[in-house]
Length: 316
Ligand code: ZN
Image (cartoon, rainbow, N blue to C red; front, side, top):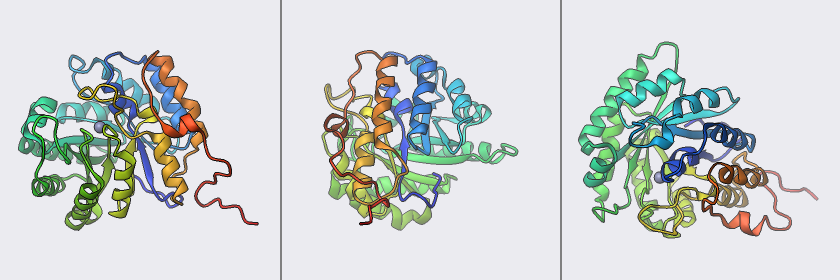
């Protein structure tokens, strides 16, 4: 999580990781890098460019090393990669990744299905990755954790809020620089999101991380506003809401970057991102994945007449 003073909110694009891993087809490497270039060109400061997982499990992510090696050549871009374990972290660090993000699932069933570990084993892996990145000579590598299924699980249903908070504290104690909360399944509602992030800030202080929200049930942007109220300053989103949700046919996945930036800027919160440049980048997704469903209300409707970005109010 890098914070710069000319923006109020850090929008972290996760389409090349969360979006692409939910699509069966594989986007060619040259289209991934073109997409990442366009996102950085639109003003995004942080992109999760892929994950270092077994290519047998997720062949869509087999080229993540190459994608990282390209992305780190872009100026002013914090390059993140998801790593489920120490082995992935070793590959990510040797490729030159700036920041690692590890999923630690609050749901036991989801944790087993996702990374083949219990939540406690996943926390132990965070410690190992922390030791690895501290020993990476001359290279400062940030370590973030996202507590997955923090708002509910498609396999287990409700997840205890106290347990989510205890797990977040364990991850911070295991060495994570920040611990965020992920609504992996799109189960969260605004009251719950505000309550959990408020508690996260009380427990973790400066180590409280960002919000990873999905729009599966249409609550995504309402949940953003609730998280803003709780003091969250980093949000994950995906261009075109790419990815959908394998458990909810026809439903969108991650919150849509174009709509998120529009919401924030229209509320007076600076993101440093050009909405029209984001919209212009959407065809690149379809170039790599012809016919794929992409989402977004602002791209459909266009910017309103007289729209001004935060901090750029016209003085008469
Ligand atoms: Zn997600």
